[in-house]
Length: 289
Ligand code: NAP
Image 1 (cartoon, rainbow, N blue to C red):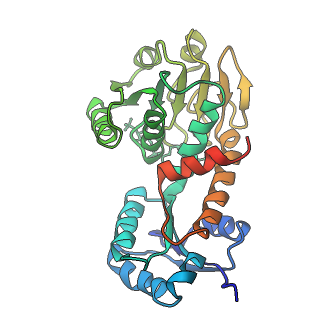
Image 2: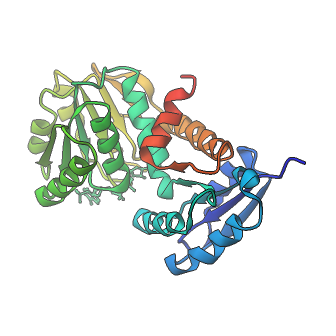
């Protein structure tokens, strides 16, 4: 008898994300088990409950989704989950805390539709947050030369160093962008910019964007007015504005949702998958444009 699919939703917030629950249901999960305010020390018993009930041959029907708004907390939960596995006794797991992996993957995939990423120069504004760091990492993996921008040069340097450890031989440059002239200098000669700033923060003025001669793609992930890149509409999806092709947060959101659903479905194809930024990006690459 085919086993029903069961997804354990691990979430560090007081209420497990409704958004993630709806995506799980829409992805076809039969039974969703939700755990909120989850602490790392509580993970082991839950994972054991998932690992030791069905035989190894049936474990691909049980999987774990790690969400929650705090990405560091999600990463710690993933570490604890992985530590529980041994031999064939494991279930597949997807990390998408705060939508960081699916959003970064969708942004980089959107860019790749317009620019050959290998050898391109890409700038990630506010590249120090969870989404920006992942976007920078994925761009580096695709062979882009990446400038990581931040209000703090030290923060940008730390992100570059962390990515360098994961992606050998990549060209990463930390840049400080406290002012519009600095932002203008940061995008000089770049083909792609992704604005990954906090909600409701303008990072680039319309003048700076319009003055750029090199930008081919500009992507703004902030959905809350004012836009992260002034002049980009939240609904923009491959919309040309004064030269570059532009995407707004909702323009990226459709692809993000498709990737999220496909990643949940992929969890139930094997019992040994760990889907983090790179794996989620690879799932996006397989989806029809
Ligand atoms: P975040 O952690 O809240 O912020 C990212 C970076 O923004 C911070 O590291 C900081 O960089 C910069 N920042 C914060 N406050 C600022 C301020 N007052 N002025 C200038 N810069 C400031 O963001 P995130 O969670 O990575 O998410 C990035 C964006 O993606 C957000 O706008 C979020 O809403 C959006 N998002 C969109 C989707 C979607 O489906 N479209 C899904 C998830 C997230 P520095 O300190 O280094 O300057």
